[in-house]
Image (cartoon, rainbow, N blue to C red):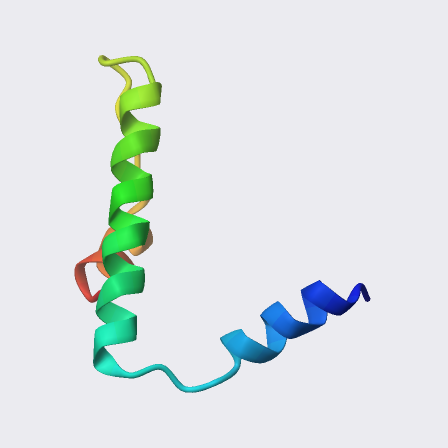
Length: 58
């Protein structure tokens, strides 16, 4: 495993504070919006019901 990949894995395993979690959630939501814009306007993002439950709890 490359050294940088190991560091990233190690950092991800550290507990996150509330602000860190909120920042990560905002970044992920932004990524979803960007991906939705890249899709055809009529298609939109389609989530399975279990994905919607997961996203609603974040």
